[in-house]
Amino acid sequence: MPRVAVVKFPGTNCEEETALALRTHSGVEAKIVWHLDYRWRDWDAAVIPGGFSYGDYGRAGLIASWSPAVGELREAADNNVPILGVCNGFQILVEAGLLPGALLPNAGGRFVARWVHVRVHNPRGPWLLKAREGDVYSMPVAHAEGRYHVDDVSSVTADRPWIEYLENPNGSIASIAGVASADGAVLGMMPHPERAVWPWQPPPGHGTGGKMLFESIGLALKRGW
Image 1: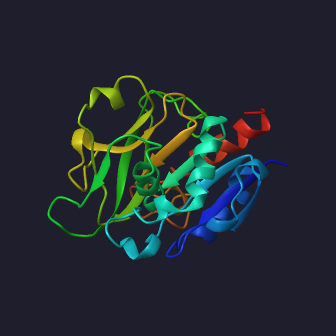
Image 2: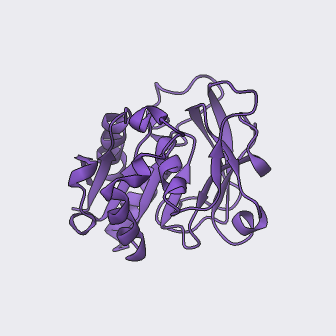
């Protein structure tokens, strides 16, 4: 059975539901791994879940990006191991230079917690295996520093998978909610897929859009990604 590490930093708070979503909807062995204990060769994929690593001291994801785990994640990425960063996990991947751009304080300076609809573009790779171009999914966001910025928008939107907000909650450039590496193996996103996998989670007008990512990675790993 494929093995997925859910990498926990001090301040991470979404690890339990992320691991449960992986076990239930990906059909993998998922374990929570303390960041200092993570060794990429022991795992078939890794997820950095949401939370407030190191209390977002300095800026979100900054201190976590100095952890030895990030060196392991860089080696994992170099060896085509799938990596997903959700919310704070996305911030860590950007701070570590594993994905381009920056995540800035939300426009208006307020914490945003709401459900949004997102559209998938250029889907490929293990996390978006079951998505098609233009598919729309709903998931919640909950962050204070989620305004994505990149100097050259076309470098993100033209040649790599990315996710677009249909209702931009934070002022992200080009309404970008998530970006991936060129092959899609490394994906970072601000919406929380683990909070949109069971029918009791979404409010009216929204669905279990997060299941697509977990079903995708399960299928990809079983196919030998």
